[in-house]
Length: 389
Ligand SMILES: [Zn+2]
Ligand SMILES: [Zn+2]
Image (cartoon, rainbow, N blue to C red; front, side, top):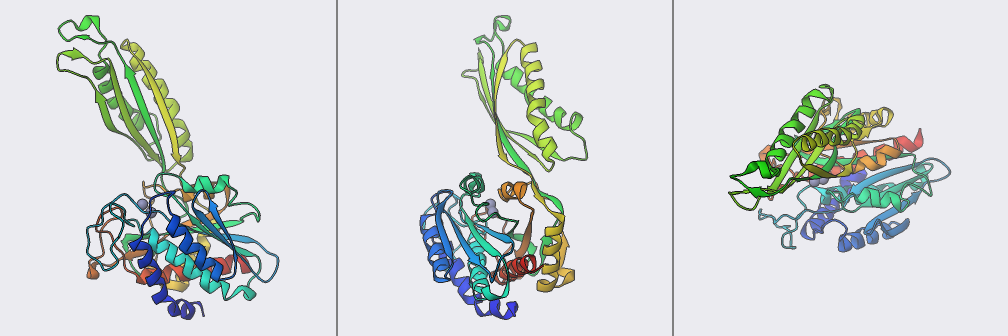
């Protein structure tokens, strides 16, 4: 029954996705996007809340009686990328592009809302359709949680999906436990003392100190973190010095940290502090570190992931439901999953025969739109199986 219903709105979902694709908006500026979503949800006769976490939209659909509350989540934002391909639905906003597939996620969730609203007499409890702004680096999930998206009514379970072009269309990827990395960033300022390069004894060379720091951070990775817990400590920029014959008095390093282990994510900044303090003091300088917590590790609940697996088996068949390795990319779905049991999974959307294999965040990124039907079938089945059992 769900399959037929989804097939019936497949063209409409493609139309919705292409409309979002033409009108991409960056994180926390998704005004048109939010209006389009809210209009659809109001037409479906559910309670709609706008402006949650700046530009987020929430629709609450009541079932036929008391029960649990399940949340289905889509992100909304695009990226600061100039689209290079010449598709008919190419971005109309200069320098902004849906290059991660969030246009597809919104279309899937609107399609799901339309089907489940037509079935509201057939399940207990309620469904929260959460359209979240600013997934790319800005943490829109956190903003929505602060404004109560998980409360009133309290959410009992949460599901989210990502279309993914490295997985062919027709496949679904799942994983128990950590599926995507935690991501933090840091800025380290190293201070020395300026002077003449011919009289180094009078200065403290901030460049020499910083080169020790860059190398020793990699020793932290191999000597202080259990080798079974992968971690990346990456220095991405290094800025300092004014002239070839002058001792630099200041160097600024910026970088990021990624890990799949929440305990390691907590451990890294204190270990960095200790090592930085020893090296800079030992070499006669000093340092300041600004350590910013970004996204936590995305951790899937086992029971909820079992629901994803069984829904996947019904939608694409057992042999197309794959356990996938974790990725060191990050996701702010992690903020919800820290508080609510749930599962985040991947919908295959690549198709090499159609030339749809570009990586996400690429200026020619696109995906196979038949994945929209698969995504909507998954979300419908997940909500129903959670609420009915
Ligand atoms: Zn992305
Ligand atoms: Zn994304």
